[in-house]
Image (cartoon, rainbow, N blue to C red; front, side, top):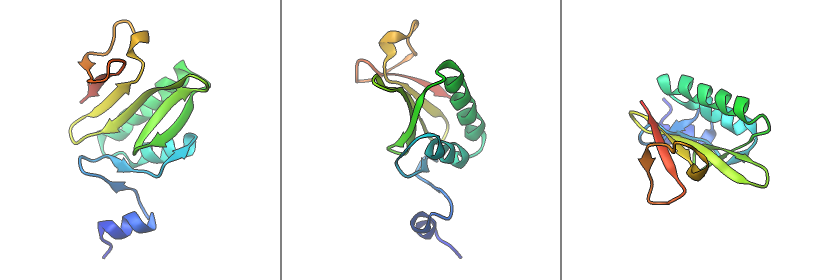
Length: 120
């Protein structure tokens, strides 16, 4: 029988952190982001793929990476503009440059330029 720590150590399958967020190694490009999306559980996987496809359609040259167990999307030379993270009951979509959105996303952050949208 394989325990959770063995799966984490061997990389046989993604480890889901508390709250259901996949633990994916830091990396640049589409490959680690696709690994994150595939590791999302249940209904969240479909939403993750939808978010990814919407972002790619809107920003064809989008830069992708996984940082802090979350996919990040950005533009070369302009930084990251969006990320998301799984929680038990929702996905928190983080808009890192909310000043450029009209109207801004509804959930405030303690960091002025950041706003959130929770997807249930």
